[in-house]
Amino acid sequence: MTSFTKPTVKKKKPSKSLNAIEVNDLSFAYGKNEVLNSISLEILRNKVTSFIGPSGCGKSTLLRCFNRMNELLENARIIKGSVVVEGHDIYEKTVDPIELRKRIGMVFQNSNPFPKTIYQNVAYGLKIQGVKSKRKIDEIVENSLIQAALWDEVKDRLNANAYELSGGQQQRLCIARTLAVEPEIILMDEPCSSLDPVATARVEELIFNLKQNYTIVIVTHNMQQAGRISDLTAFFYLGKLIEFDETKKIFINPKMKQTEDYICGKFG
Image 1 (spheres, rainbow, N blue to C red):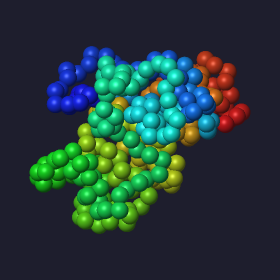
Image 2: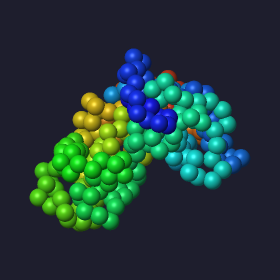
Image 3: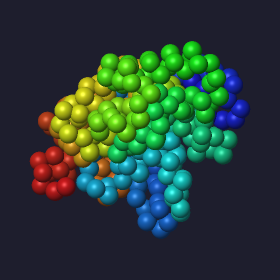
Image 4: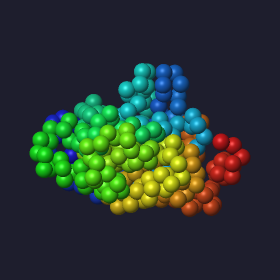
């Protein structure tokens, strides 16, 4: 894995740890409003981990802590704790957030393709990184679209505007754009919330297939979706991690009464 620090020229030996991300006693606030309280959990490699819980419980905030997107917001700050990725505390001063975000990709709630062609969308990050070989870019664009289960649908119209795609296709295009820069970890914040059931099923199938090569963390309000696609599930409430376990245990035999009440729909 490429180092998160500057300059990024040396390759590190792969970590022997099974954990892709380790969160240690993390508390986080926007101004005086503490939104995460003493969170500790371990995200396993090549697994899909779902964050569930009612709106405002802190799950999206925690997700954005993993690639330091929160620090783009005014008055956002870590009160205590750490986030460790590949042996690096990613909030150390030596860590370059831009390099970090190359390694930890993000797919947002609403598909956000650029006002460019399908090809240019996928190639964008490569060109920003200085890749100049058209042959190499062509290969990566094709491979990324194949991984995103979109190649067969767009291979004959790569020069069409991305906005001509359906909502589900646009979201898979954004996933392809994320894959093109070869991240190790993919963060997804409600990636299916604006999609119809057919498009949602395609994205869920894609997520299931991608975990062979990537670690995926997904925030979802859809508990059925969490049950279908995730290996592990974390339940949050009011900024606290209430329970974290294998998904089947969370949904069939939760340890905490609060988790059971949420899953049964007694609050949300």
